[in-house]
Length: 415
Image (cartoon, rainbow, N blue to C red):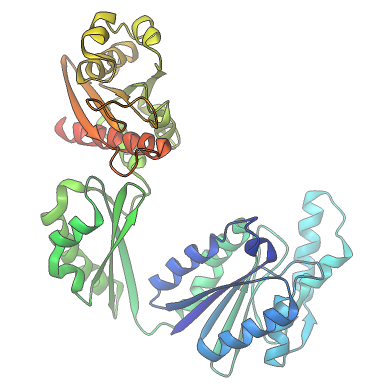
C-alpha cells in the first residue's frame, strides 16, 4: 500500500510552526508496512488544496491529512475531500454532543461556528477526539482511503494510537514488528561497515539512522504472526549484539539518560555531578527522567576557578600547575562531587566549549571527564571540536552524552 501525508495550514508554509506530524505518521505507517512516498504541505486555499488532493488520489492508495478540520472558514479539508469524492456533509448528533460536552467541561459557552465540526461526510468512519473538538475521519471510495486528522499534536497523537492504527491494521495481510537498538560511541558509517551483510537482508531488515550524537538501528520483520516476527528479529539482534555490543546502551528505550537513571535505581547506586563546561546540562538530562530523585544526590555548576576551589575544594595549585582543563582537575572535581554528595559515583566535567578560548595545545572541543568511585578516580579525554569548533551548543551537548555513557559503563563494572 502506497501512502501520502498532506499537512494543511498556511502557518506551516510560513514557518510559524514545525510539521512534526510528518515524522510521527511516517514512522507509524512504516511500522505497519505502508510505504510513505510523499510528504506534501499546502496552505489554506481552496483551489490549491483541491489540486493537491486530486494529485494525491492519482498516485496514492492511502492519504492522511493533518489540519484543516477547525471551525473557521479557512478550514477546508473536509469540504474539499467531500467535493472530490462526491459526498455530502451531514450533521452527526453524537459528535455535536461531544463538542457541547467539551465546552461545558471547560465552563465555556460553545461558539456557534464549532457546529461546523459536527458536519461529517456520509458513510465516514469517525475517530473520537478526547482532547479537542474536531473528530478524525476516514472515507473509503473506489479503492482509495482518506484519513483526516486534527492538527494539534495533543489531539492527533492519542487519536492515532487509540483509533486510527487499529483501523489501519485490519487492512494488513501480514504482521510487522520493529525493535530499535540505540548505540553511542560509534558513527553510522562505521556501524554499517561492521554489520556488513546484515544491513542488506530483506527480512528482517536492518536500517541505520544517524541521530544527534548517536545511532539508531531499526530491525524490522514481516511474518504471519508476532511470534515469528520476534523470532526473526531476536536472531538478528543477537548478531548485532555480538558485533557491536559495547556500543549498545538499550533496546526500545527513549534516551541514554533514561537508561542511566534506571540502572542507577536498579543497582541501588547514587550519583553526584560537578559540571563546568556543560553548565548543568547533565543534571538537566538526569532530572528530566521520572524517578531521578531515587538516584541523583548532588549537582554543582562550578564554572569559575574560584567556585571550584571554594565549593569543591579543588586545590588552586592543581589548577595553576595543570590548567583548569586537565585530567587532574576533572578527577579532583569528580572526587569532590562524590564526597559532597555522599554518592556512589561522582562525575566531573571540564572543557573548552568555544568558540573562543582554545589554544594549539588545548583546542576548542577538548573535554575531560572525571569519574570517582570509592577511593578510585580516573579521567577520560574527549576531542569534540572536529567539525564543531564554532558550535558551542553541540560540543556541550555531546560532552553531556559522553558523561552519561561514562556513568553507564561505570555502572556495568559495579557488579
